[in-house]
Length: 342
Image (cartoon, rainbow, N blue to C red):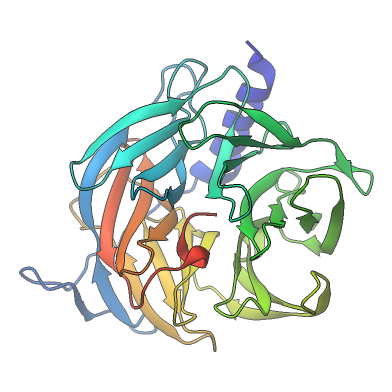
């Protein structure tokens, strides 16, 4: 068992991320209404309802952190637990209708921060943040393969999230610089065969979320330590033609985590340090805030979301001292590949 990498990840998460005290604001929702008027500047409030608890705090790592919800072809939801120790579920498969879950993968090495199915080969791809690797699994959780490992332009990656283009090439948020609080983050493009890795953008502030826009013309990326969403315009061949700060997120103690995009191009920005998501349109207007009920104690972060492909039912991963939970809410538009994990 490789204790050092796992301890390092736990220390990183505890010191740099989970030490933040998330404070969910009380919603103004009454009865069974799904939305109401939110606080000034936060648009509507969308109430998220608890689906089920998936994990408890692990004795071996002292925490649990759910991430990367993504739907498989059969409609089941796959979720990773970043800090699960060897022998405990690192990838779970959830039947959201029956509210049941089961382990589909564990190992003695990986610290997986995201999950996404490839449109090229149908395999489940995972980012191993601690070891700088990307691995893939068969849909049943077996046949683990190392897809990419090693340095990119002379530096090891800390891969966090993944977005696939239509051909199956990977666009990876590299969160280098998080522990030093320096802007060494990158966006890396890896060909679908895993042979060539190219840095598309650098000097980013702990790159976290990454998602294509609705038309695959560019990438939305969230930068954790600057609480901003940036936009990278692409040339159609995988190269960046321009880059700018698109949204400055008013998160208070919370920081920008993973990001997803629905069919209308709306952005769902997860908040690490608050069990909530901020929803913007593509022009940067704050449309809504997704909140868990005020009575839900011990939840500190909403890390990611998957919207049902072709539907509007959204599933959000939420974690904290109370454990790891799955919550659901009604998205503003239908789900697509850009709103399915990452």
